[in-house]
Image 1 (cartoon, helix red, strand yellow):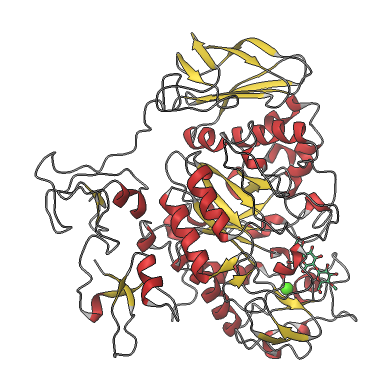
Image 2 (cartoon, protein in one colour):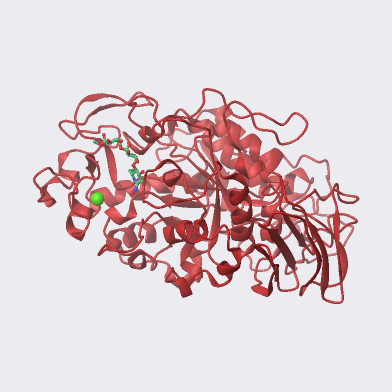
Length: 606
Ligand code: LM2
Ligand code: CA
């Protein structure tokens, strides 16, 4: 086996999120259930063009007492805990992909649960954390790092010593040795199961506590994104690693940028200390000693530092809602780093787990109930996915400042935003590089098919006429994709159209294929339009084609071709233990076979 062979030849790969065209930014739906996330994708994140959702760890965890952090104590890699089970996870990813929203999974390769005691985890699997036995994987004492740690407690005692930071236990969490072939193999399988189910990337926990060389090998062995879920087959999973580097320690975030992005914690402090001087943020990024734009994931706060865990310093959270709105709008609008928006629940005790009920609030708008905050649904914030998705590929231009903590800037000829951090309305004429037009103010209202539910902003001769209020939504933002008279010109993508209208194809074997999608269209979108889904290895050939039987339903998820294929043409579409109805729910073919190694739940090779 060529273990050293990584896939770096493929370009930005692990550094670029494979967002659908027109979508941008990720939302961390912290502690939301899989079922609630699926619904959020369909009703909110998809229509509002968010790029991805980061989900809480879906793998079996130790049951400690309901705290949020018990989910950072793995027991096995089975998908079962309070967010849901394997089937619900698979259903969530499929439904989110179908509306153009990617899933990024929070994974914990550094450790297992806290040391001591035994019991069964959230999925019913036995473990013994005293004798370091995790039969669900299985891992045993030999797979752990205890023999490589030389502190007297066995825990990390000094962050000035890189060896103990990586080989000793983090707060007594049983430390895995990623240097062994066996552990690497298990971790690769752990992550690949998510790719098989259609996930598009990973937030990797506690990377400071693992050796960069080990992570490089593990990430390099991951599969490409799943063709069956509508990806091209060449895209790498998006990797972003949690490394808390606020300076002052020997381990730095830069050690990890060779194989993925890294969370830039300095950004939280940088924006948090400039809420009253937004103009200082113009050149936030490498000029401030931060990671390069291509290497960083940025956020105003995260699930740890909003409650005093994981790093220090003052960070702005939902409790300072005005500052959170202005900073989040800035972050999503600016071109530094790949942004993540935190979506929280209210708490009084920093250990407190999530509310007992999932958020609702679709009755008449995007309210949020049951103890959840839903920052991503706030008026000022909810349309930022649309904005970011439509300015992709442009840089910040025409930076300007008002007199009262007010800033405005453009994203080339694609977008413009104005943020009012002052105490009264900000109105007037501001320079922009947007083309002339009348655009829907996405910070104040929503684009609809025929128009815009809120105020519009007129651009003429390089000047935008703004009137940004104070109060609930102190931001205005517009993009060429959303004009006053509707959704705006649809974004243009490189065309792969072949064939001509009429004489539509009735099967994937047709030679007159006419493109029914656009770059990035997924199977769900394609079949929902009544088109045929025909993955193809021929370069330039459309995968989603117009069909003669345009009956609005596709052919029920057999990939547009028959389930009647020989064993060698069957590609695994399920997982261990899947049954016929679960398989069909995934849109796959089901055929029981007596031949070993032949998948019962499959899709036809093409
Ligand atoms: C991280 N960074 O590398 C997160 O920033 C950090 O918040 C996570 O810890 C950590 N990785 C492990 O995934 C959280 C939480 C800890 C909690 C652990 C494990 O911040 O407080 O530790 O998850 O659940 C808890 C107890 C701790 C105890 C430990 C082991 O709070 O007192 O240590 O479990 O039993 C004796
Ligand atoms: Ca470690």
